[in-house]
Length: 186
Ligand code: GAR
Image (cartoon, rainbow, N blue to C red; front, side, top):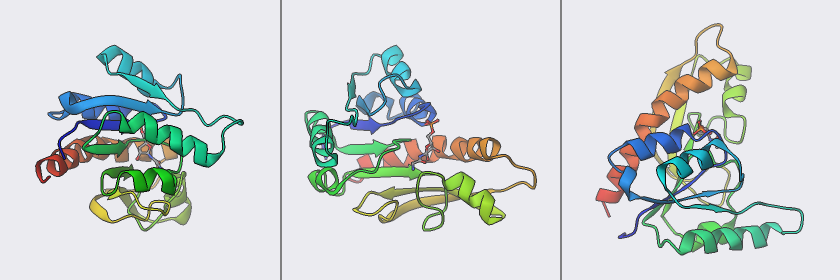
């Protein structure tokens, strides 16, 4: 590994901001998003980080979108690709283009509660503990090899937003630390 870090994000971008604010912030070479006007894009612009937008419009097949995503990411020759709140499933075309180089932060203790509504699903299931997982991305949905996990207690009257915010507070520390470790070990 000798390139920088490409971050994929679709939302508020608080994990992206935490990466930028960390020791490995200077390694971030590009934000790739599927949502042109999301918070992560604002953060990138303020930080002077290049943004590449690859939207999944009706005219694109999933395969074509994945190909466009490969093109957008490959030009940076990244050492690591970090999915930090990227809310689309990365297809085999994309995953196979960057073997062992894509990681994802997920707001649950995988294999429990994969998918787009992990926090809501944990609350519905009535568990007393959830957390976050950082894992390599494979062809499944949140099924790749787990790198690290940390638990978060669920309080009796937690709303989805309150619980998610406490999980994100953990992710904002764990994700930059994990990126740093992975970059150093390669
Ligand atoms: C994080 O909790 C991340 O784990 C989650 O989106 C949030 C992004 O927060 N990702 C997923 O749920 C992916 N399935 P942010 O927009 O504040 O960085």
